[in-house]
Image 1 (cartoon, helix red, strand yellow):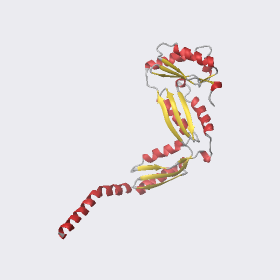
Image 2 (cartoon, rainbow, N blue to C red):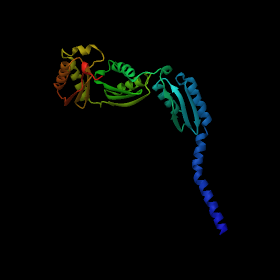
Image 3 (spheres, rainbow, N blue to C red):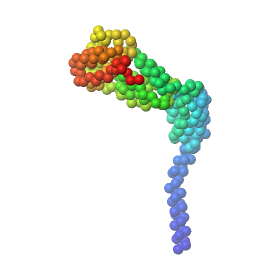
Image 4 (tube, rainbow, N blue to C red):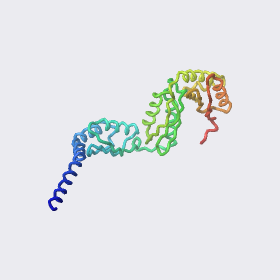
Length: 259
C-alpha cells in the first residue's frame, strides 16, 4: 500500500508539473525580451520632447506608463508607439493630461475655445452640412451631432485632442451615410435657404450659422439665428424643397439661448 501511495503521489506531482509547464513557459517567454523592450521604450521617451514627463517600466512584456503630458493627443500618440513595439504583451497607461506647464482652464473657457475652432473647421469643405455639439465636464469633452464625411469627423477629433486643457474625449459623432439623393438635397436646400433675401446675411460668414443635416431625406436645421422670423423662414424654405421627407427645426434664436 505504501508503495502504491508513493507512486500515486509521484504521478500527481509529475502531472501538475506537466500541466503548469505551458503557463510557466509563457511567463518566461514574456519576460525574455524585457530588457530589450525597456531600452526601446526609454529611447522613445527620451527622443520625443512631448514625453519628457513620462516614465516607464517593463515586466513580463507589460509596459507601465506613469507621469504627465501636455495634450491628450500626446497621450494617445504615446500609446500607439508602445503598441507598435515588438514583444509588448500589454500596456498600463497611468499618464495624466495636465495641460501646458500645468496651467488649468475652466470647462467654460475650454468650451468657448473649442467652439471657436470647430465652427470654422474645414471651411470650404461643406461645413454647412456639419452640426457638432459640445459637452464638457472636468476637462472631458463629449462630441455629438452629425458630420458630412469621415474627414470632417477626423478633423474635429484632432482639434479636440490637440487643445490644451482637454483631458479626455467621448466621441458620439455620427457620419452621415453616403447617398447621391441626399447630396442633391443638400445643394437644393442650401440654395433655398441661403437664397432667401432675409437669410442671405448668414452666408457672408464662412461658418454659416444655419447648418443643414440630411439623412435619407430627413432634414435637421441647427445653429443660431438672429430672430424668430429667420428661424421660421429657414424652416419654411426647407419644407418647400421637393423630396424632403421631414424637417426638424433645431435652430436657436440668439437672445433665447440657454445660459
